[in-house]
Length: 546
Image (cartoon, rainbow, N blue to C red):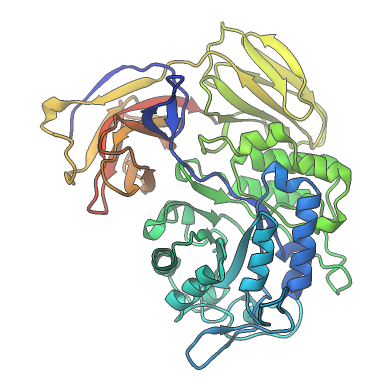
């Protein structure tokens, strides 16, 4: 084990960055994928999706102002394909369902609708299953079972086809994999490799969305699976089955209890960072069953989670109040903060009265959610000590929904929060200086590229969640994934972006969790691949929490 020396660290904005300097002298951030924002056809159209639906929703996303607010993906979910292939195994789509849209195009070519979406300034998403048959066969929501709607046996062929059609995003479901009792770790790694191959052949990027509903704890294996640079993975089942107007399921309703349940199941702090995100499911905002108050709390929960913001409602029917919730820039800035880590529950003084915080990329910046899950009005307080700020220094407090500045406040802030409601705040104060642990050269480790010996940092005992910043050099020509194991627990993957051969150290930030009763905690980095980054030091800022 490598010996480590500890010393104080300066307070600095927390995000993955390159070590180069801008003209202002500030550190430049690396290009890190933020949580995707967009729309999906599933919740409002089920497997009735076709070209007309996608055209209508694309136009509605643009005209509603959601495009300008940052929503970019139009995702075509289940029902786009009836499982037919030609003699060479290529996907064959219904020519009436996906006709030519302009002169020179051909019926039954999915690149037609991709071109339409791209011409609107948006990105296009597509759907498949990891098994041989998908959800349309095992449990169709509308219509008869449709066999052979998965990609098993055709991974390389299908994902290359998706990339050649021009799709930018692919969601891979698990109905077939589940019924065939396949191993999701194996199947999703094979799919990641097929995506990587398709990208190299076409030069076209495919964002990877894993939809295995939390089976076998994807947060422990999905980050960077198969070497992909950014991805998301579902952490739970659907909040609600599709609600499709004019069909037998039109009377279904989304529930606020379902929203809260998926939020809870989506918190896996140790997995989310630098482009890897837990996905608690598509948002129900604007769908039948939720009040506008519940829509606003729903948006707050997904934002402080740093979750993908994929809207499921029929965009052509959005009212102004719902548009305002979906496009509030103060709230979106929390979700899209480049630090990319997740909410931490730092307090629950009484059951159902919760204090959630999300560290932001600006030094001393915190998003704070005071959540009242009880049936009665209650006062909820957050202290600066809880959120890693100096208690004796004033902090500016702002209401994120109204944009109102609430003043410079010392020590703590309390709000009376109605039943089933939440107060969403931005707090900016003086950062408590984290502790830095330096890799000691006296241990004999030279930190050379190719040194595969595991590297361990011995730190003060962790009791809850801590934010860890890792200072490193990646002198290779590609991002590198390493495994981080905390106190012998299941490891998670950490992505190290490029720093460049002529540059100084960069840094990435992640969250770790432990409940160590011994005198110290141990953070061990190991290297599953041949390319190895050089780790210089780490800093640790504990947040605790119940």
